[in-house]
Image (cartoon, rainbow, N blue to C red; front, side, top):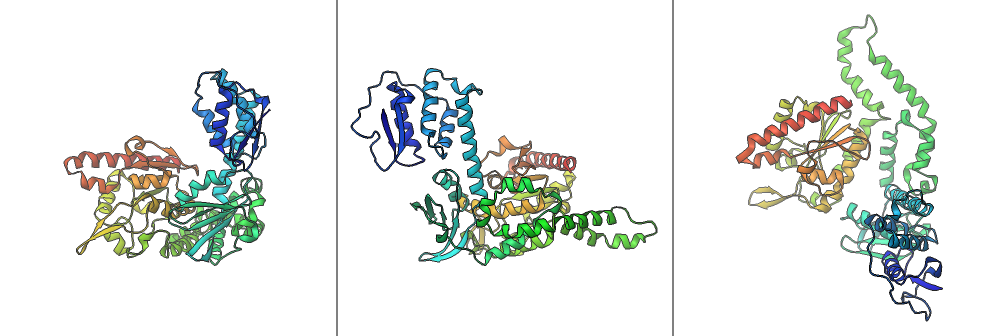
Length: 487
């Protein structure tokens, strides 16, 4: 029996090196014992690995992707199971395509469980502010079901690139200082902070977007298992929100009935005069709670945003604007010089061109919500002028939190990325405008995301401005028609 010792529970590289050597030496899976320990040598004891008896072989990429997930599973037999499948692939490259194979099915289930655990980590990590020698640090506690912490560290580095943070778990802790990721041994729940003043604002926001008409307790507890509740401040409100859900739902229904058709004999002038109040009331109740109040709370938080360094030289935060029941959300790049001074999006030269194009496309801007991927103006001073400078990846990632919250509140059927920066913010990666343009892309929340150029692009292409402008108008016309169809 050969004993293979790996350095860590998620030692993918170590497993691949050992498994390749074993498969080439024709060692059967039943003759290998996989173990995790501190011994650095690959094979324990004085055992010698038999020399290779087979030529080098390749494996399909789906197997490598599967292995990368399965090694993070808590199942003690995972390394042996993967090696058994590797031996089958060595002899038959199409072995993974047999979906009825119990081994393939078992490994696929394990991979699915790891992906789900990673999703839970992304969704349920809650940072709390503490002070250390380096200043402010955001600290979170999480208890994963599998060995996913190292694998998912990159997600948090990309998402919070300009924030100092630590994630504590029982097995392993990871720390980011805005430049370097480090590890430390596991911690206990007592090592994590209990709360901070930001949580009260977050709880107010969470309560205001809670939708009683869509409450499904079974689905909620399935997607947000109770084991994570103790880490999240908003769960303290869940019992009260559930208890009052039915009453709030009936209030929504009654308000909807009262304004759907004016009562006979009601003075039409009074009905029209109350339209603005009715619309505001509708937004307050749909989709769930004081929606306008939630947006105002979000705006107040954004005004004090320090998630990246752009807040320093900028005049102010430029947040989104428009009706909260908009069917289209337009996301631009960042505010320009005039937007920075006025505190409103799309009012400069590009904004004026945007308004003209919307009009020709038959889309009323006043019915749309307009915002930017980055909320502060990034520029280079040149004398008395401030020259636009393109936001970098860390700045886009740091500001994505605000876009996510705007989308959660408004739930637009159609979201439009105006330019590459907006597309990166919405898709979480760099995309090519030409490849994405002119067709819908399914968003994680069920809506559609469309991609087109930024209006400032039209100001720069003087040689073919008329042609590109016409194409931009056609994009907007198609988007407007699609939003009407979905609404």
